[in-house]
Image (cartoon, helix red, strand yellow):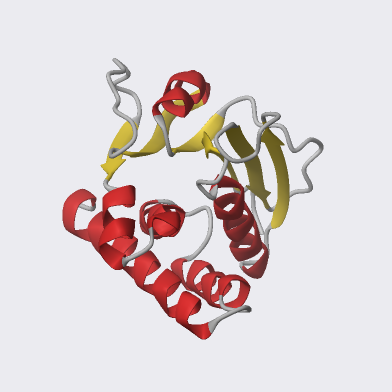
Length: 186
């Protein structure tokens, strides 16, 4: 195996699917053969309150699922950017939904990627799939889980109820990947 370890914080308002995003990453990383720790945290109101989760993906067993310093931050709103950006490692990756947040930070030691996730989700017909657009970008730009495992998990986990929803989620995932390739991969 080796000494592979990646940490992720996903954060946003309740109802934006950040906990689901974290679960999908966790399931995908497990498919890839890694040990995974996932812990959710939410404010007292689910929908509209704040929600975040920490994921640790490693070849080793993890002693604690709490992430004090993250390799990756996925922020679906402005308060999440402000709260968690200081916890991002040097050389870390910050993905944020540019429709609901902005980044005025001064850190030159992190890669900052604005993603029009909400716009793309609305374009595809369902604002609730912005998290899956973000997952596509994350899968393409990081090695926390393979693209293949992420796609398989989207199909399995989100396709259980209705085939039409599975197709929509897979389209959102594909759009996120395309965006990452077009705009950010050099």
